[in-house]
Image (cartoon, rainbow, N blue to C red; front, side, top):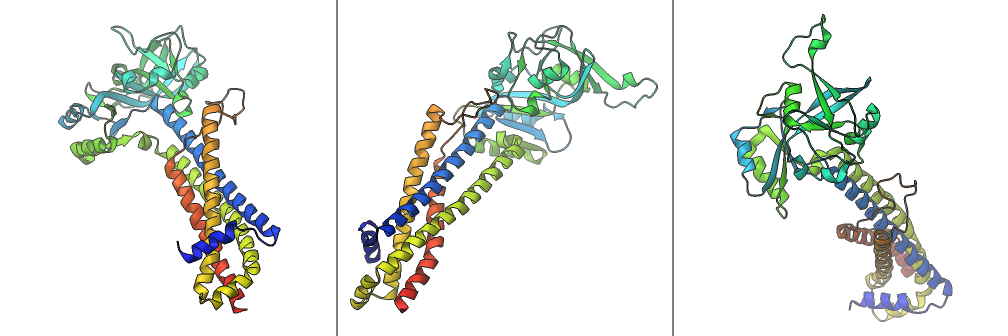
Length: 410
């Protein structure tokens, strides 16, 4: 064992002549441990909220989404797109038409995003888990097209889950001059009947604005051709390498198309969550830095107490570097012990919260979850441990060296 580390270990665990030094050392370890525990718990809570958001978007967003780099729609019958559907990694492919429209029911109106999908959309996503009502996921039959509205849109229209009259859908006609004499002729009109179900994914973006129907109805109302689509949505086989599949699809399609995974489909939301997590990490690092100043106080008193030992070591041939490294090593050991205790306590608290929900959200069941969600990512735990060590060395190293040199000069 390194000599300076060996002596630092003896100093750390040996009884001091002044009891206050032991107390200050204990306070220093406790301060580092509490700051470390707070960092582990806070980062785990952010991970938990991110996991909930991911699950909610999974009910509506596909695993992969292909859109054109230019224009709203493209020809879905192109050879390159057909080649994508035949890839061994691809499990389900569905074409979609998505655009803005207006819906009217019993005198109430709302601007919506009308999304026409194929019948296999319920296999592509987890939309079934978000359905409310006693009906079935049906988009059309031989004579009728049906609507599956978001819960917020149903409230805005006051139409209920089982609306007795059809919804009236209006969309501007493409490729026609605007007629001021007959404004109604500028809009295509269609009717959608109740499917007996609505969806609620707990995301206002979808619940308040989206209406699902058949792709044939969407093509008709928006004046699109038989093979046109605004996006192609894909689900991969379980266990496939998503990143490798994206690269292969991008190579097939070229620069005319963009392939997005779930993170890129909701890039703004996930970026905000990452920024919030990073800012919390920075603030907690500053708190940790303040906690490390307790170590300086402990080492200052220890250096003063060990003046006689320092003289003995110097008479035995120890140079200034060895003596300085002894106290720096003791500061590092205090940081390491505090970090280990804090990480163990933080992980334990997160596991208890995850399994028993000790800390509730409140709100009387108005939230998506009743208790604060947590998810332990070991990469965060390792990053926290590394942060504690680095911050501890930075906070303790220079002041301790200056103090030790001053004592040695005296």
